[in-house]
Image (cartoon, rainbow, N blue to C red; front, side):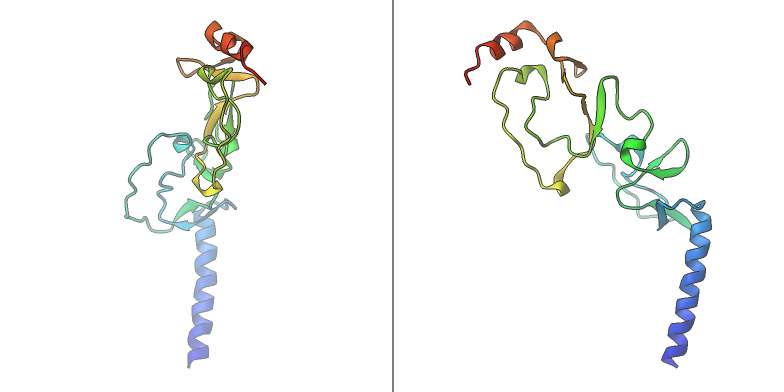
Length: 160
């Protein structure tokens, strides 16, 4: 009796998995879920606050697998660096914006920058300035040489 029950449960699971795959539009980066993709959409990357998630689930819905985000334009699950236009001019996507040993803004130029080692689980994903650029007082990425003179003066007087 138990073997028969397990066999029927196994067959039902296979049929359900097949129907869910069809429901997910054949997206290999999606899995059966509630369909909310709460805090897992491309537009959530780099957001300063986490949204409250609803516990309501839709029938035959899908969510993106771990490490993937919903591209709201295509309805497909993509890697964060494949999300459209998540970063502004002179920015690049980073899996860990709150770690590292580099200056991140003009006010740090010429000053010692502590190396921040972070547990990967605590990393914040988002956009950082590309190589050779720092954030100015308006939060925009500018070429390092465009930082205000006071930052460059501090750099010149730094002792090695």
